Length: 400
Image (tube, rainbow, N blue to C red):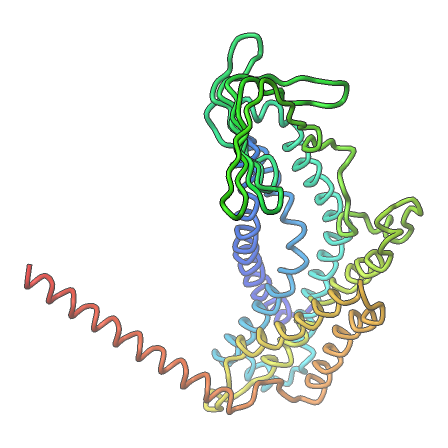
């Protein structure tokens, strides 16, 4: 590899790693916040939460890597063009392959990494994640005997234990059940206990009342000496973990078990997941080609065009949306499997045509003018708002 090629690869790699880390951090944070209820609702420790959070990373890596790559390539080449480095490379007689080769080597490495994570690491991480979530909700007995806290047992079902009494008895039991359509049930018992009947666990409530309120406002009160509330349905055992096609290994998807009930009901979902895994890795190569087609040649600063980074990201987002659309439809309509592979192949072919023909892939100039005017109006409006806010603050201080 030539010195210039190593220089380009080193710069692109630095930007790629920085973009990858920040993008992963942002996406990972949004995914983690959606699972914060694992601690708040299930009473799990912070260690379990962070373990579940860490297992999310492999699932977002194949999606984030191509976007980090297109940002890195477009930004690196754009800066090199601004610093006239691309013009110097062309003037020195170097071919366009001098710029293309290091970028494609980086894209190939990113594709191999994405393929390994998507087909090797992610399925096992998903299975481990489901096991942790299931085990955290399985120990319901230790969860509900915590004093003075409301716990969500199921959608529409909440339970509170007032205190723990001697002999493993419970005091001040409160249950709110809104799962029945058209009625809300509230149970209150002075005492109670957890009774095991074989594999079943029952909350036995003593000396209490049941309030039943309908949507029309009718209220009925029933007193009871003892009442058994079955908790077995909410005891999730690890053997009952439901594994979706996304959770299965690639080897299993290639040869599913005939006894798999989900495979018997929807075999197309397994084939669609397999097609997505075998095509998703290619988007790193596709996005690198798009970035090269957009920013890979020397351009004059006087030309009116959208910034190459914006153009590359916009085109990449459109291509990736087509890929997601095809993958989402493939489990219902098998013919969309052709589109799953066709989107990256056609996009790559179009980008290669632009590169080979020495053309630049860019958004229309009219779009550039519209975006420039929009940005200018937004900036003027924001400056006017800040000036008005500053005047109000100054007036308020003078009056005070």
